Image 1 (cartoon, helix red, strand yellow):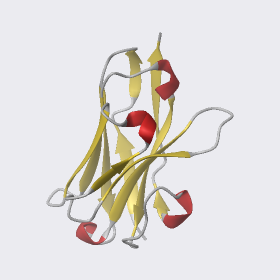
Image 2 (cartoon, rainbow, N blue to C red; image 1 turned 90 degrees about the vertical axis):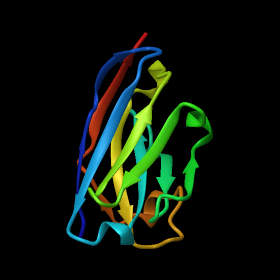
Image 3 (cartoon, one colour; image 1 turned 120 degrees about the vertical axis):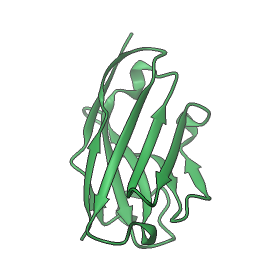
Length: 124
């Protein structure tokens, strides 16, 4: 089992930036595909971004392309989500997720371990 702890959420004005971080433990980090998802009130959890085990490959939801960047540091066991040009519709709880399956991409069911989430609120 993998333990995941997110940090970095908060309140920001539209057009601003935030950087989320997720610290992992409990399993060799380099063996894990990592993803970020989000869930807004009254909505289903949705995929945001995914990064391969080595960090060489990334994949994004269309609505964040060009604004968000996912990265990882396998020496520090962390995965980050840099969020720029934030919009009010980006307001949600953001979750870090891990999977031992290299085929895990944008389906939440493909991820086996989840963090507790961190709130991001973007004001207009």
